[in-house]
View 1 (tube, helix red, strand yellow):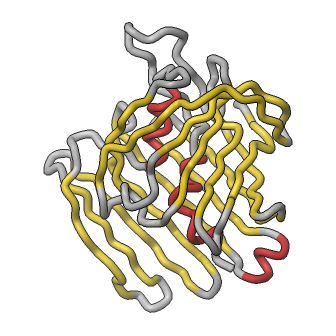
View 2: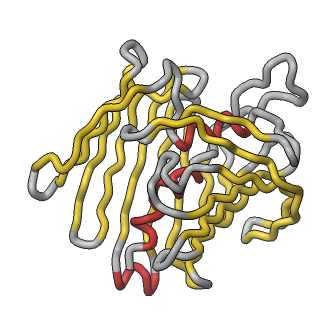
Length: 250
């Protein structure tokens, strides 16, 4: 029962508590400011499966995923992710500490902006050995999934519009299409929101090899809070949904 583990790379996209970048003069609306903590419920096949906690500052983001209930009894997951940036959300390094079942792995990625290269190293912490390592060419400014969504929040895309952003997971790099699809009301444990639904083309071998689709609902206001995230993936993962449970503001 490893649905959370399999979905981790995309669930990290929930790390959007950080303020979005200031709009360019051609964009409308005020810049988003402030930082804080967002707490999400994770649901899998109508079962409460865990919690995602997001904290951020202007130069880094942190995400903690923890399984719960029946899912945790079958396959306990405790993952923590940290990422650091140069402006404007250009990734410089990231670390994923992953405790899943009996496994404990650590993945470190260095984004060398001087050499335009990303270096990926995954270690088995218990065996103290390197499992995988690789390098890939990247643009001078590339985003991890989290940084890409920081940028999305500042783009003011209307339904029918789309943008492409350079994204890398340390092993692949691609221009990822993000499409604004339509306005929808969304009910979450944190309340009711008017939103715009977006689809991010991250899966199907673009950046991540898993087959599926990623949808994001941002509040349709100046703050653009990510209130819901949904992964529609193939069996055995199927659909995983994150809904905003609570927002702690400083």
